[in-house]
Length: 130
Image (cartoon, rainbow, N blue to C red; front, side, top):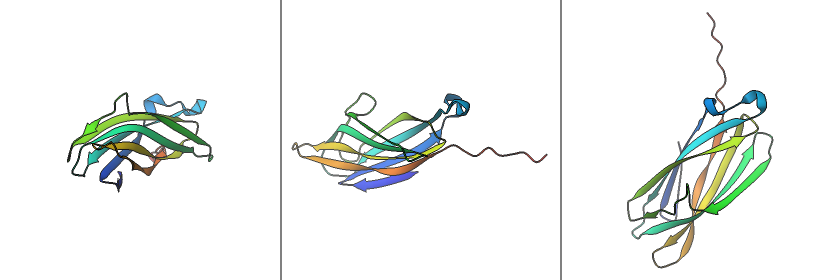
């Protein structure tokens, strides 16, 4: 699990490799990640936009920007959490993701909530020595 706390928002990420969605022989590796966003502040906030900086195992960078997450712009009261799962295809068996959410406070003020850097890694195949 990876965790970051910034501006009163805690973001935790749990990535995993999806073998059933991957085709290594075709250069396709698929990873899922579950994110939990928790409002540790004393006022309501809303997630407006996301930004992802994705780096594959060869150092190639792909940036993703968009409104909300999984089609939603969740509002979180004090102490509330929102979780979602999404995915990321790579052409290499490993990579890194990091980014931020653009959030808005009840008074209209905008701020960023950091998404911690996390690694995407295909588990190494283990050989049986039987």
